[in-house]
Image 1 (cartoon, rainbow, N blue to C red):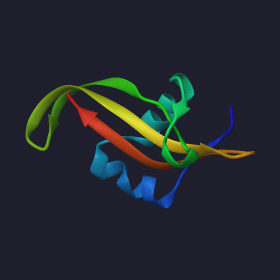
Image 2: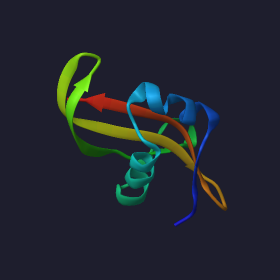
Image 3: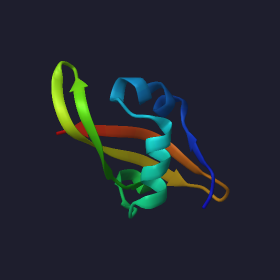
Image 4: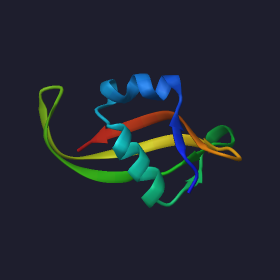
Length: 84
């Protein structure tokens, strides 16, 4: 698989979204891709969480990166996180 690079925006958002770069890589490498808006791609994966986020306890989190596949690399544009 091609190398994965996070855009500046995606990298800045990791902490604010409660996601690690390793989780983003794992999601892209192990989940089924599908088309997203503006010719981009997306995929999603649920991870065990079992801790608090913004003072609320959650068992799981879902990571949904939005990315483009270039000739030599995959570039992550942004990352969405859902806690439940």
